[in-house]
Amino acid sequence: MVRIHPNRRRGEIAACFDGESRLLCLTLGALAELESAFGVANLAELAERFESGRLSAADILRIVGAGLRGAGNRFSDADVAEMSAEGGAAGFARIATELLWTTFGGDEMEPPDLARADTQKTDNSHRESAKNPSVPQAETRW
Image 1 (tube, rainbow, N blue to C red):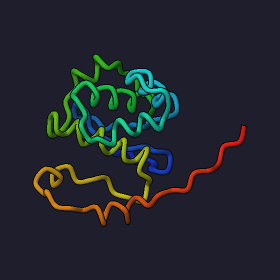
Image 2: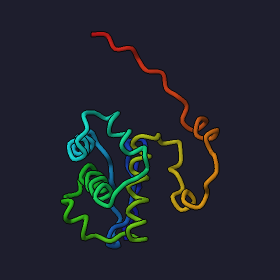
Image 3: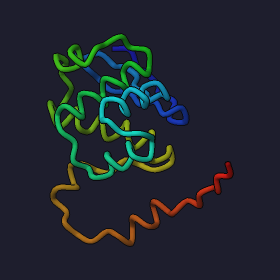
């Protein structure tokens, strides 16, 4: 198997499908594809939709498919639906989460640990504010 080295600064991740490593990246075109698929008007609404952490199998399929196409792979969502990933459906969920985290969360932060998220029901709000400080918004002038 060929080792792929993703460039996190470009938003790339690597994942293994059907035993083959592939790059995924949510480029501007891939994000536009997701905006259309999810019926949202802009990136802020798209990010809000994903913040809930409740992704359906169809959502995961669309995210992974858009990420594969964004990195130059020629797979339809139907092709992705037929693929296998290590860990099955949970593996696909981890791939989609890592891709979204890399795209929207920044390259220096680690994606949330999905395996531990379900078993730990503690209040981590103090950690969240440290990990995700508010970012001042630029004023728009028309």
